[in-house]
Image 1: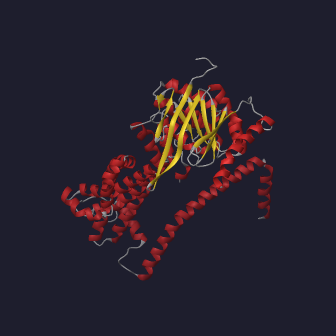
Image 2: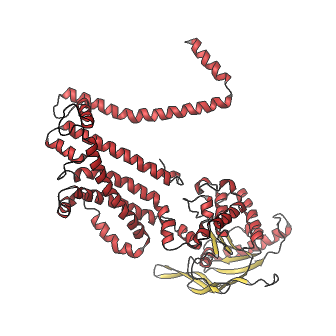
Length: 260
Length: 290
């Protein structure tokens, strides 16, 4: 395995999803085909109802595709697993556990030796900079801190795909910027493959190696942009703005079409 | 007068500002605690005064005055006033009732909590048991009295059974409700982190429904003390319920009221204990603290 040609970690073939509504069925996802190489940072962007969250939940194993299959390194996904860690918009931390207990939850399920669990937990508490808050409960933390815990919780569990469902959507602008920066640092350090759902074009272009624009009715991947800008990216540079305009144009063209 | 006021003002000025504000805050807190106590204790005192005046003005002989009840309470606790069958027997009666109340209560919790967790989580069990539970629940516990006497005979076991029945439904239903209202994302989060099966019950279902379980325990505990009087009405010689019923039979209203007050005090104290335990276990959830 050379660095020049990383193997695909995730393969999605012909995945569709239908939901029963009354007597009929609504098609949420048209056949989706997608491969994602290891360590890639992918953003999925689209209007609400385009199926981006559904696709993410299918990858996570929380929902089954109606047809088609999802595989990780060729192994089919049959349900939730610790190789894929989901970070939810509303955090979904365990409110009765402290920061440390939330982060150590995964390692504790694997019944590692006590010292090993403590070592991993300390490492990830430190990675997200919450040493001073390690013994606090989630309701004593700000939104940004909660999302840091959620990220640390899945990374401490050796997840090699990070699935993020509008993770910074509920945060204020300053915290959001800070967390975007921290997420990129963590991604660089760990090389974790990241699939990040957002509805902000700027966020997508700022973070991703690759932006997938999705459209609704039924949900499908409309276009696949490569973002080759060097990091850290300057949001006010002409190159950044050109890309942002391209992505936004793809996104809105369909909104206009749908309205007509 | 004037001199005195000046001295206080001078003293306040001389102390450093930080200390002054800390002092002021502490004083305000102390005042708040005092206020809560005065209001909380003041109302029952007012009720006793009204009771006393009402008895005196109407000249009734059916209701004893607060003073007569206080004498009865003293005799019931320590003896030496009337020296009859009830003198100095408070501990025996309290102990018997406590045993029955908590026998029934803990039995109800022991069965109700695990059953509620299972029914709340497993659809098959819910479909199997929910209709039966909904059918049995509206039956007043007191309607079980004749049957419980047939099952358990005249005696303490019938009382324990009634307490158990009365405590069982609130515990079961609150536990079920608690499980049903857990955010499904928590299950998703737990399963992606490698948690499943029995581990899910112990680590997610139980702690997440603990707030609802505790409100069920508090309601059940109240019912348990209500039902002990019914349970001890017949066939048992000791217990606070039997004291109240004996008082009624003997037309000794002072004894009846004394028994009522002791039951109230026992219920109050144990409710405080449950609240303290729940505050301790639910310290992560400020909205469930009192």
